[in-house]
Length: 159
Image (cartoon, rainbow, N blue to C red; front, side, top):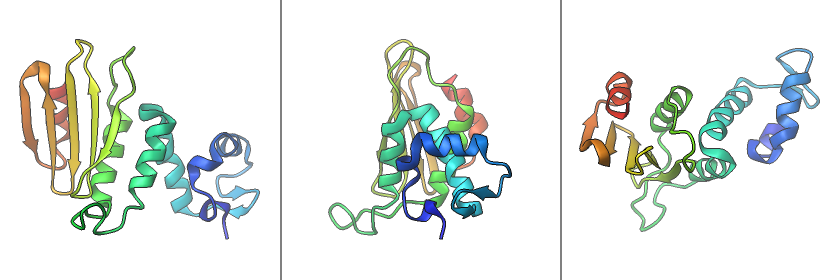
């Protein structure tokens, strides 16, 4: 059994980063062989932490444990497609420098919503719902629903 199955990746933290840098081969660790899932999780955690900080990472990983029916009984479990699209966005989008880190929220549909302030201090929100992407930019008077994979239009609306 890999140690990644025992501890969530955010608990391993700095030790895990050092392990990735110093291990002799991509498939070896102290505990044995890494699974592809564990490596994928580390990459996801890197992009989440880089954009949203440790608190954002902890919140997202916690949201992924919410069961079907959470909240008032109508909350959906985490949508894998929403999560993957959010990770794709975090890999490429540069949040405004000098602002607070974006906040992350979990939606009743099982999606993820990011909210931050633009350089002008206006609210910006992007929701990665299971079947769509919604974008709101207060300063640009933008409030649109996009196709799930329309990243090109999403980036244009936010720039």
